[in-house]
Length: 89
Image (cartoon, rainbow, N blue to C red; front, side):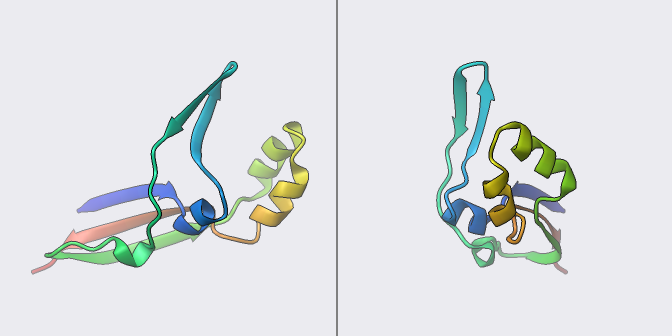
């Protein structure tokens, strides 16, 4: 079994990044554009895919950062996904 959780590829296309702040330092994780359909491997079958949008908990984070307008836009599109592949056969 393979489990993957990541920023949704659609969120990456909308400009979201895998970055975090630590004080004034910004830590970024490299990323490349891809589609969920690209995540295939011989002998594995997609067993479960969950695509989630931001919700009430994240709204508070956006509000504290002064970015409530960005939340309203982001809340209607997938932000993250969790997928599980299992070995076939």
